[in-house]
Length: 387
Image (cartoon, rainbow, N blue to C red; front, side):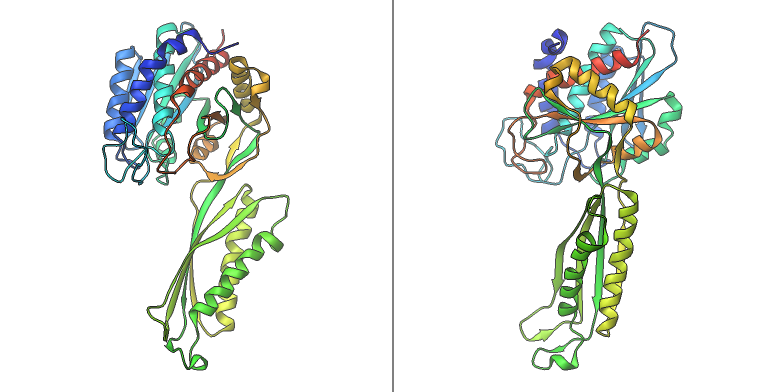
């Protein structure tokens, strides 16, 4: 089956919404303008219940179907932007200096609004659909904030589904997999305190630059020799700061980086080995070390049955050959993982065509994907809430 006729009819209107949201981005929880826009639209659609302020600035709309079932499924979109200066030059480019929708959350929000409008018009399902608009996906744990605010219990949500655009995937395609689809994106920092001195007398120092260099090398052994090669892990040092001039060995050096894993056991291993490697190398050189390890969101794990439901809806829209049901997992992170820990569900990728990469200042959501996204959400809701 092709995209829904009504989704195609909504294309122009939803594109205008998307571009309005793009022009007016907010970071993390500071998405009041977008949340107010969402609230106004949901009320205009005749959505049965609209609740604001969940997870600080999240919005949930409840659309009840024609039947008497008390089943509820959740459909989630994220609303926040990134701290980047946009360079697209588009007429709808960001009006907020240093802020832009470089991950397509404007498109996600607009597509779910389009689906909400269609579902509120037709109500061709038995039960209720919770359309969830989440703040602070980009590092703020907005999904967890909404879960901890009692969202699942308050609305009786039984299943939860998410969707993200993917540059490089052709328009009219979807991709999904059972199990881990996005990584746990942790970060670490290591402060080395040695003994500074004159660069001409290194024997009188405990050089934190040399020690830090050995730690950087040692950390590469986690993936190469400590972790099971069948269980992916990436350890990357992304900053190394030390020293002030050419002839002084400094007192301190500072390293920071990220760990990406698709398995909780490997995640534990990586954290433990980072501490052991840093402490062991520092001790061998008569230096001190402080290690901080911060766990962000967990692995995004798609539940088996719900993955099949999501794939079926996508196949009904674009055909089996255009749905990859065993896509490679991504080592990027996604805080929808917290919602998938709270309820069974699935997270799917939608093709965004040949656009700039996510988190790039040249990126812009491809509006031609909108009708496919609306159709997917509607089809999924109707299939999961059949009579």
